[in-house]
Each structure stands twice: as structure tokens, then as C-alpha cells.
Length: 445
Image 1 (cartoon, helix red, strand yellow):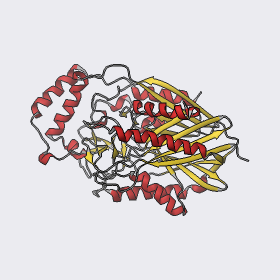
Image 2: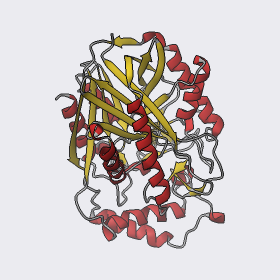
Image 3: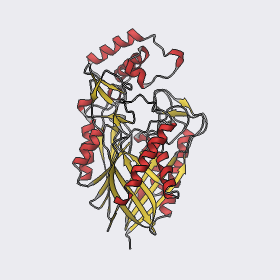
Image 4: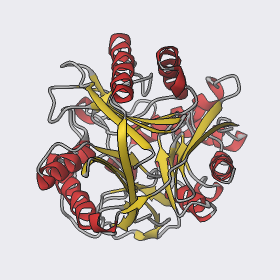
């Protein structure tokens, strides 16, 4: 007889028409829903030990937002205090959850998200019943690419454009490894979790969508013949996306999300035979904090930015349109002004105070552990953590327990690429190493 109890529930958190959508440099009023957004809650219990995972079909959540939600959850479900991982799928076609790029979140919407988080967790706890846990690994090498390229002039450029003859080579690598978890009750699979490294940004536009993770879930359900919930935990992907620059094909629309979602579903379905049962389960949870200081601008950087701003201060985007990654790659005047202004604000409008971030580990025996990274970490962070983890299967939860933006390793800064371009909220180049150290320490306790 199994010593694991499992419960699951979900709630719809699709925003109202007109709500501004988060994920790009400018808000876009939502025109409707291509598919629904959800908060999903999975609860695991062995004996008197309990752990939960809450996943949101949202772009991001800062620690302050998660702390506010957790405080209310803990008041109602105190057994989950300190034992719950909150993370986002990072869809770029969901509503704002905090102030970003000049837009703010809707307080009523966030209150609804909190209420529905509590409801989902309460229902998941009520539905706890004997279960079995299975896990396996597989990989996919054809759907994700490093999006930062070293150009022939030696500089780093993000999304340099398809078939760009000035591309020399990718700055970094990818992580094709996928970790799968499956829960069975009464012999039937009732829950799937997949840890995948890819950016959740295939659609664009102004229609709400859960992006490829939502499509992947639907495809899994269609193939298996029933509505099994599938939770996607995004692995480090700050320097990863789905664009294959060696082709000229368009890869920004809903059809692309469908292609990728079906692709990942096919990979998971073809690897189901690899799943192995984990016996005599024991759950361990632990949490820690680390400091994530803000980027400090040098005098030389500030002076150069001021010069660039003055040269381009009157620049506007033609027809008032939003600028894109292609505009960044081309270095259009408005984009130059925008990034120069962001750099200057690091000093002119510096954020005061110490920024502390949180990490959590949820471990099952000595075989599998889930550890959070409160950022959009570069893939190299995840590779380093897995290399130093004692767990053969280490699930990496990017955008978990907070979000400080893009975080790379020190060598990723100073040569270009918009992820590491200075801004008020950008983390210091040392934060990546601190995040690795924090995760490894939690994993090795």
C-alpha cells in the first residue's frame, strides 16, 4: 500500500477583456482569450510531512506578491507554511501582476488570484488520497535555442534576426533534459509534471493564452483520452527561446505555440514507458534566503548612456508602434534612447534598500528534488546546479518564489544582449553565483 497521499485542484484566472497584457516592453489591452489561464495546486503528503506546488499561467510574480499570497494561504492552511513552492509558467500573454514597463496590475484581479489560490489549495488538500509517484527523464533537442549570439564584430546580440549573415556563433548552450513526474491513483495517471527549458513566448499580440504549456496539456489529454492535469515547471530559460535563426520561417503566432506544445507532448508521450515508481516515499522541504543586490552603474557607463540619450532624445517609433527584438537588434534610435534612459535610471532613480530573495527545495527520497530560482536564470545556472546536486533528477523551478529578472553568470555581462543591459531592477552580475550556491546548499542538506 502506498504511503503517499496526493491531491490536485485548479481555478480559472483568465483576466477580463481590456486588461493590459504583460510580457513585452509595452502593455497591450487584451482582446479575448485564445485559451484559459489557470492556477494549479498539487499537494503531496507522506505521514505528517506535506508539500505543495502552486503554478500560475502568468508571466511573473515578484517576491512581495508571493509573500502577500502566502500570508493569506498560511492563515487558512497553516500546515502549508514554509512547504509551498509558488511559480509561474511565464506566458507573455497574461495580465500584469506587478508594476513593470510603466504598467500596473489590477488590485481586484490580484485579490481574485489570491482567493482562487486559497480555493485551489483547499480543494487539493481535501482531495488528498493514496497515490503512487513515478519519475523519469527524457530530452528534446529541436525546439529550444540559445538566443544570445556572438556577432562577427565580437559583440553579443539577443535575437539578431533570422538568417543574419553577421552571426558568428551562439554565446551559450541549451539544456535539452526534461524531467517528468507522474502520479497514479487506483492505477490511473491523474497528474503529470514536466520540467522544460524554453521561453514561453511564442504568440505575441493581444489575446490571452497559456502559450505552449497550455497546448501541451491539451495535446496530452487528447492523446490519453481524458482530462489529466499537466503542470509545466519552466527550467532556466533566460537566454533560451524557440527561434531557429538558421531558417527564414516566421515563428511568432498561435500556430507556433501549437507546434511547440504538440512537439513537447509528443516527447513526453513517447517517454511514458520510462517512468519508474518511487517506493517508501519521504518528503523533505527547506527554505533559505540570499541577497540579490541591484546592478551598480559605473561612471563610464553612465556618461556614455547620457551621450547616447542626448543624441537620440527626440526619436520616436514610427506610427507609435511598439518596438520589437528586431528593432533592438537593428539599434533603431528610439531603442537606443530607451536603453540609455534605463541605464541612467539605475543611478538617477536608484532603488533603495536591501533586496532579499527566497529559495525552496522539495525533495522526494534521494532520487528527486525540486528547487526554485527566483529569476529568469540563464540555462548555465541550471546546468551548474544539476551538476552539484546529489539528486539524480533535479527539477529546476525558474520564476519560483519571486522574480528579479534575467540572471546570468558574470561572463554574460558587459558585452551586449538586452537581458543583461542595465536597468533599475537588474540584479548584480554576482547574483547568479549566489543563486547557484543557495540551491546547491539546500539540495545538499
